[in-house]
Length: 487
Image (cartoon, rainbow, N blue to C red):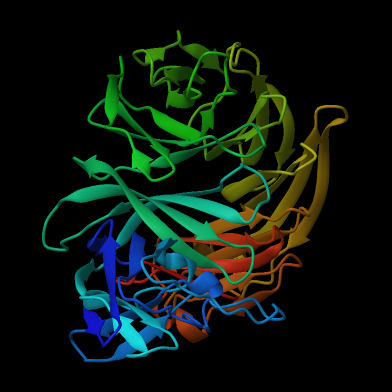
């Protein structure tokens, strides 16, 4: 759209890099304001930062119109942007930096500029945007650096059409610095079946890129995500079935001459006719075919939980929990990008069955862990947090036990446990019995019902931490992607 006057010819254009979006997926917006007239435009978009555009969004279902922009920072001195005759203002913005579509649907998006001069305003032609429902399924969440941080990554499976058995792997970016929000979702690949995708972390530092990998149909499939680009997926045929991925995927340290660091995937398989299992490391690369190391036998069978801490020196400390003779036994082995996991040491045994567990690597390379354990039977079941920690210098330390105040006579049939940057454990638990209920579990073992916006609470769910320690509940809302609420 252009406004023409006696001495004025002003126009604005808008272009979106993507117009068919999944709900909570963002896109890049490029605008250009052109002054082809003979007079200067004064005080261009005085409410916005650096004369950036105002984005006008119309909901085609309701007719509602809203305007969004990057505002000036409070306390900034007043500025008056001018656009001389014959010049233009170009801007490239990421929409989720200042706006989100409120729900799935169809929208018209345009760019608007206001100024002092004849006409006073100009608005672009609109661009039609379709926002499809998001139905997150199987989920794996990690902070971008593997330890406490303000950016989390969620690899998840999405089912676009609930009537069809068709799935896609997506990677969501979630900011947890201030108000937690899903800032973008990026499509990774199609999935041929129900799979669990996992995302990589670097050795306790800022990432170069993310490897996303999953198992299905006897193959390990993987793809590389970097910035706004996703490389075409590749796959590696496994020699045996029954493997599971031990999270996270590892982004290897950079190697001179290698543009993008490779990745490693730790795979575990319980041996059918033995007292233990085996580990296999898969090596991923953008420059050569993926490969598998020789299997390594370990004395751990039918693991209840396993996860690896990835330290800044690139050492990997994998901790596993197995239920053995009424006790949860915590085993530990260390390895590196160049050495295989060949030795496992039992660090602790607790008189309980493992219901859920987690660990986190602090900025100082300490590993803080917790297990939610169940003891007793039937109506006499009891639950507790079992805390522990590990450092390379001091070794393993068995921490405190915290009893959980569960209502009398009920048990837990589903649990999610996370530990924050200070080692405090939190949980989401569902009770069994005639009236199942969801509760949020505090570090002191106290339970409080999940309420408020969570009346639509659905799995998959997780617990994130704002600034590393303040808990936030993330759960799936059918069609509306991920919801983020305070407990």
